[in-house]
Image: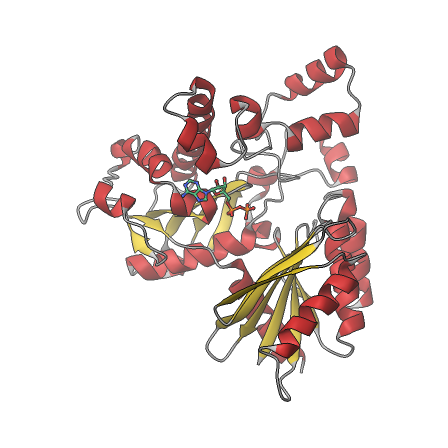
Length: 396
Ligand code: ADP
């Protein structure tokens, strides 16, 4: 059974073709600069890298070009895509599970653009495109927010007028749910505990970052909120702020909503603090000589530390701490900074394991560490493919 996983952004389309027999990725890649000049598609198909320069007017052109490549390589003979799984950022208050796409589901995804104007419209457009190109093939939407539906009311409620929150659907929704669920389950396996009887803090740290408290396999709190702006500082996003900062900036700098949103989403975070880069690798390279780069890194590390401490309290203890995504998987500096300051919890990092490069699930704490610390490479695409297979088989 072959499943195509799609992640459509406003000008990009990421894809993965997964063979579900062996849960193996046969092909993956990205079409970039859709709707612009100088478009291109990059891919790895059965280990071979390729690239095509191609201007693509829309997602449909991009997906057609991707399918042409797949048909010339892996999709030979009578092999067909059995189902398509879509990553959808915001599932709003109603989608607590993945859904087979029906006209009503698609309409609701489009309406949820209210919460995620940058993310949901391209996801909906990706779904329509796939429906056109694969008529009769089941489409499944997997929501980034769904895993966090289990949060208790006291964890997702904002301190605003209750009626206003109800009217506008203002609450913490959380994101990266597919990743948090995947790495929490892998961590439980790694430490030999049932996921249903474990307290795991998962730190997904990439361009976007969020931290989640996973209690008995369910999300009980997470650092992102109504939108993916809340929480720790990110590449270009500000993370949590005193809301008074916002009114001050708006008044003093005469900014309207869209201008403020641009500032908070695109010009803040590691980039804003350092003035160097939004990319953690470049920040770390500049740290030795650039004070603001070091400050940006410390602000991120300190943010992670505070969430870990807070979530250990929220779960009345913690059985494992896990790092994942671009920074979490690849930055020994950040992991070391955070873990050294968790000694009070009994965390003891194995510095050699921490600095050893590996693509495998692994522990980076000493055997004597009271709380194991893990690095688990995330695999959101595999999780989306699994959910797509499960729902497709259920409805057949
Ligand atoms: P996204 O949220 O877009 O999926 P990723 O999970 O790919 O992002 O994470 C990208 C981040 O990971 C960037 O800040 C990048 O600098 C960081 N990163 C990747 N490799 C390293 C490394 N070796 N050391 C430190 N940071 C790294």
